[in-house]
Image 1 (cartoon, rainbow, N blue to C red):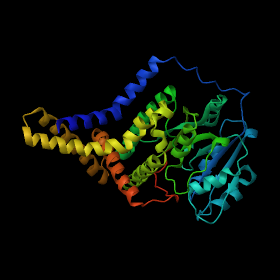
Image 2: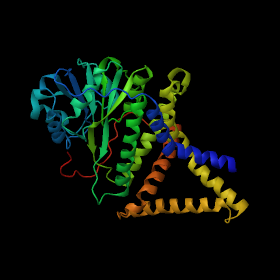
Image 3: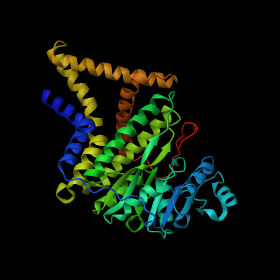
Image 4: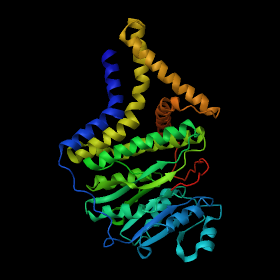
Length: 397
């Protein structure tokens, strides 16, 4: 029990702390990669900005204004809004309000986001396509900052940064989500510097059009699959933190739970489909990053945490509270008590930042286990599932 407990603790520590340390050390030991090419007026390839927008009419005025406000030569950028299946008259609103300024791909049948994206890609004639969600706001330099990476022919895709817009009075879930994405962004910077990032966020990412592979219409994490299929072919997926998408946190803990469970189920689906990436002899550093950053976090740590608790309890029963295991058990009880308190306060719409870190950490891993159950039951589909977001705040950018 002691050996299994120590191994489980080691896996959790490696996943959330050790991997970052190892990547940082590897970066320091290898020659520094040449700096990214600066923005230049002599490299402005044609791009298409695709915005999937299922029943997002409330977001469209701000999203269109934000898109048209991109600091990129207007003659080199096209805007395609995909409203397929919407029942809120998004299609009519865009056509009547913006006319020829936008391209609109509509339709009455709701076939799912992935099917809509695959259909949209059949119309793309530009060498680069950028995907962004309708409920996010991009910084004005986002397109320019992303495009500059495509000077390098070895770059097949570029991921922007997701930022969570929170206020001091936000819920624990929102605050935890914001902290998580700050940590995740730092890891992505190191991943990209070492070799490639392992998975783009759908809020903002770009691909070379010729490298886009249509994915199955029941794919949950389309952004993750598309970017990793490109990496599997030997291209790098770069990371550009100065191209960012601002998004509000989920409206409530219930909405965030639904989103997290769906993502977790999609993670297990993706790991099954991307099993070839587990071969280090073929993919080298990509396998190391993929296993350490994704597989460990999605499939290993969520299973280790309850195992640690049970093994620790067994050792305390065996050796007594006066042993060193008693101190570890007390620490776990304190941590999970703080997480439970955070959950109770959140349900009552009371906020205390002191407990949001243990709350959000526990919340993520519980949702991962629920996602595993959902995946094993097959209770998932590729149709768009809109999650409520907290109300917008002023000055997003």
